[in-house]
Image (cartoon, rainbow, N blue to C red):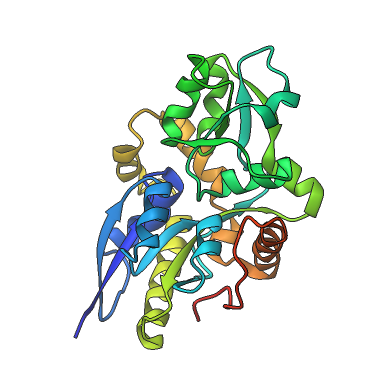
Amino acid sequence: MNRNLRLGYSTCPNDTFIFYALAHNLIDCTELTFEIELADVETLNQRARRGAFDISKLSFAAIGYLLDKYGLLRSGAALGRGCGPVVVARPGFDLKKLKTKKIAVPGMWTTACMLLGLYLSGKPDAVPMSFDKIMPAVQNGDFDFGVIIHEGRFTYKEYGLIGLVDLGEWWEQKTSLPVPLGGIAMRRDIADRTAGRAERAIRESVMYAFNNRTKADNYIKRYAQEMTLAVIHQHIDLYVNEFTLDAGDEGEEAINKLFVMARDRGILPKSNMPLFAN
C-alpha cells in the first residue's frame, strides 16, 4: 500500500533542480507517492508551523523553532561558503544606522533574519516581505536597508544598490564554518520505515540532479521566469554542493552552532530534541 506524503519545497532554482527527478517520477519511490506544493520559503516555514507538510524545505531558523515536530534530513540542505544573505542599501547609507532603522527581511523565520539578529546582537526592527520585493522597496526608498537572499546576490547592483555587509562572510569569519541556510525537514511522527524510504528517495533525486545538470532547466525556468538561464546556473552552482548530498559532520556542526548562538541570544527556544529526524 502506498503512503502519500505532503512535500513542500521552494520555487528557487536550487530546490526545483534537486527535486526535479522526484517530481517527474525518474527515481524509484517504492510504496511512496508525493503530493507536491511549491511556495517561497517563508510561506513553507509558516505552513510547517501549522503542520501542513510531512516533508518540507525550511529555513534552518524555522527548523530551530519546530524541532519538537520536525527533524532534519541529511540530504537536500543549502549550506555553503560565499552564499549568505547580504544587507543592501542605496548609495550613501551608513551601516552604523542599521540598528535604528526598519529593515526589510524575507520573513521573520528565515535564517537571513536570524543571522541579522546575531550580527546586531539583538532583535532587529525587521519588516517581513516576499524576498523578491525587497530590492525594489529599498530602491524606491520605502526602506533604507534590506536583507537579500537567493539570486539577489547576483542582481542587487541592477537596482542601484550597494552591499553593506555579507552576513554569510561575517558568519564564516566568526565560526570558520559554512553558513547554514535551509534544509529538508520531516515530521517526527512518520514511521521509521516510511521516513527511511523518503530520505533515500530525496537523496536519489539529488544524485540524479548532480548527474544530469541540464535536464531540469525547463522545469526550473517555469518557476524562475525573470531569471536568465545564466543566472539560474549561477544560483545552482552557489547553493547546490557537497552539503546538498549529505550535510556531513561539518554541516551538522554549522547547524548546531547556529542554534546554540541563537539560543544564547534568546532568539530560539531551548530544545533537547535531536537535530535529525532519524
